[in-house]
Image 1 (tube, rainbow over the protein chains, first blue to last red):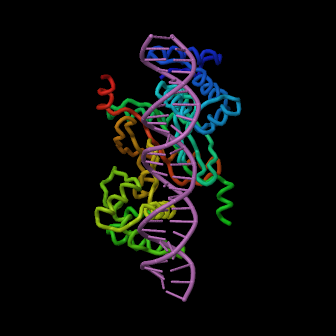
Image 2: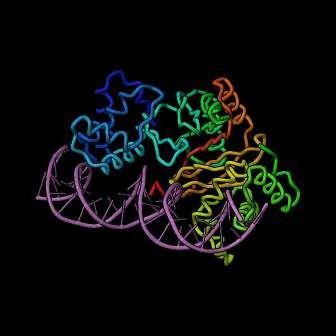
Image 3: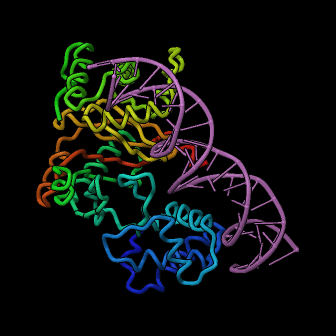
Length: 158
Length: 158
DNA sequence: TTGTGTGCAAACGGTTTGCATCTCC
DNA sequence: GGAGATGCAAACCGTTTGCACACAA
């Protein structure tokens, strides 16, 4: 899993993507590039669902199918470009993958769904260690802290 | 969130459940009891989906609807009896809730889906701290380490 | 007796798939 | 030219909901 996030210019992403795809006999397409562009441009701490990415593409005037979005997301997760997040709901979110040493985790309000990120290298260290002890090959650590945010605590007290 | 898991006899679960339900004006039903019994009896480290619990009930000859299973599971999660797990797939799993100090986490093979549990109190400590710092009220910490198990590593090498 | 809980079936929402068509290499 | 990629629509699957009936308190 590489350190794409350190590439200084957006062009570099496309080139790395192209190289990785070619190596597998796969192709760069405008759809794949545009999806990557959308995820590259969102502010840190935001995550998008497949549906949100799809809507974003439609707003740009793209003629694209939702199935293409799903297929591209899965592919880029496989390639290590994207990280798939479960969070707390019935759908999945995507963000650019970071090198392990910079990976962050999520504090999710189970009532309103708001998400805060935090970084804590110990988490990844523990995950790495547990995986190694059992001969597993680590792919991703997901630490979700489910809680009630201050606002929802007040509201639930009626 | 109580320490039901320390109750020595299965009867005690039902009594605690009854008390908690009564306090809210809710009722103990045979369906709710049986679902709790199923989850109580599975070996440590196993988790069941709603569908699996439903099938289990059908095999026992129960005439029950899948919607009842879902409603009972949600209720018992609310009451703190059960913990809902996301793991890596498109469905949710359930297990008896443990006190925070005994909570365990999951090492999941993203290929074959096998799950190993491990305990690491630091995880819960970090989650507690992050929540408190932001005024959140902690409900549950879920740490999922996604990886390839030894068997699947070999198979993917062709 | 009354409001909570149930089973059924239909609806729902996110995701996947089959297929004819298109397009990148 | 041909394998890979797309868009569409239908299928899929886990979950939720509306409703008439059943049952615990």
